Image 1 (cartoon, rainbow, N blue to C red):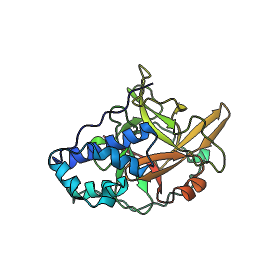
Image 2: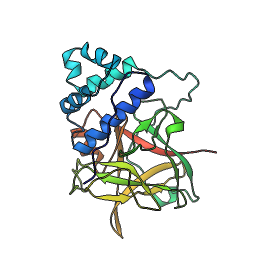
Image 3: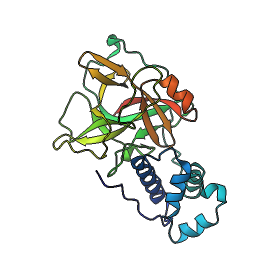
Length: 261
């Protein structure tokens, strides 16, 4: 059994430390199977505030200290990232069910960073390179984005999916979900330790760069997966309708390969 992801004490030195703290807390909650237990996460995070951050945390209203989603928002508000006024903007694209028409596939290798387009948002975000013992989260910083190359194993990092359940349901009505993490192609060592099922990511890449992942149930059968996000967490799901009804606070999203130099 792998050891729990380590979380450093939070001192409140700046927005970068704040982001690292939030990502580490989410990774630990996911490892514990408590990613949707807001009270548990808030109680755990509360033991890690230190120095100025501890004084700040102790002055928060009780309902904020006891609810991770409120506490996380308060953290982002207190240690906010400087605005990048020259950051490129995009128009939101409704994340409807993808087309799997074979004629829509890209016919050449693609490489770049994975851009995430979220329903109702007009700001770029990207799949972040996973830190030690964590899945892939989202980032607004292209310098932190995960670089991918299609149709090649020459890169040292591959993507894999790990499900939240040891026996995920893959049919209609399923509300199970998977996370993305990375795998070293030489050692086949994952950044995430889990006993739940995983596969290397198999995708269809459309001519516009959209990434359509699938879960292969056999050599001749596969199930297309859709993306959902909440905060900076990214999930892959087999039935977006059922999942969206259960987790109505999460938003549909699409992934695109954004070419880089």
